[in-house]
Length: 447
Image 1 (cartoon, rainbow, N blue to C red):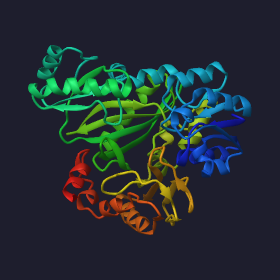
Image 2: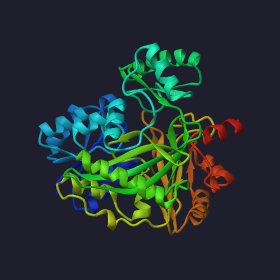
Image 3: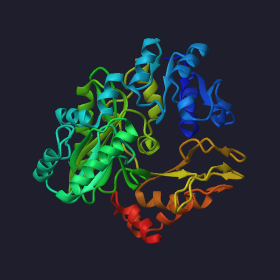
């Protein structure tokens, strides 16, 4: 087991990892920018190192500063959390060159899954169902028209190196396709420095289903069930739950088994999430995230297994602590992402939190790194905390969520709490009848 882990992140995820390390008796080091000097994870860590000014590029994305912090403090491993450098293959490689363990998969696996085209090819080879579309990057208009005609309209153009909805355009006709191809390539080049795009069949009303997987790097793989992440705004998840209200037991077992086998065959090490669109009983691979997900607590709630403990165990060479038959699913869990944003316009709302009170009681968990008097900086992601609720079934979970949202108090800034109070009382949400377009249509009607 590691002696000292450096946590290369901030906010609630840094605190989440820190807690896991303390439970395992591992010393902790956190890095922080000058803007985060008063953050909760900085206060609670055994050691802290300031690595630069507020801009991420000068601090949390500064690989050389983070490696230097490891060497100064004697950290023998780095946990990247999510975001920032968590899916940066170069970072993983540099750590390995300095004999520091990256708590995550190999640089090669990060590279494969970070390239959407190569990821799709790999998924197909591993037996994972994929969305019909191009086999690789599409550069010529004539080729794009041929592929679109073969798979049928509507189609979606996606940036190979993309994420967060950038470089994605829908075309419902050949005339739309020409414009969509040019626009997507332009956006992709500007956002990612790579204008490669590919084409897929566009599904009209799909769910977003993701499967939590783990590999030991030596040919063993397991799955921890699925999560439904269909409530999204601009391709950003807002509400996640497990298990999905849309799947039956047979579908759940099938797709979980497919993913676990694929991870084993790939020789993958650590946590990963294989994401799908699901429509009319069929699963279609979107991408694989080679890191811990923001919504991992809902999986922990229904399995009783600490996924960060598992990450650390695997990275240290201890292998997986469970076999597939050991993983049991209990009840239902929902996570709401509480952001420092206007609940209608989603405009960021940095500022000082004058009062902060979290809900409690059976089945309630709040992952947050803020406190009364804490100043939300304007430089980073707007997530200030996650409310995770667990119940014996979905009905009990929803009732408990409604009560927890009523108890949650954040004063001094605007947050998305009012949005969730609306959603928990909506009939479609209560019945689990929603798709990836539902929330944006709901918000449009409210405006």
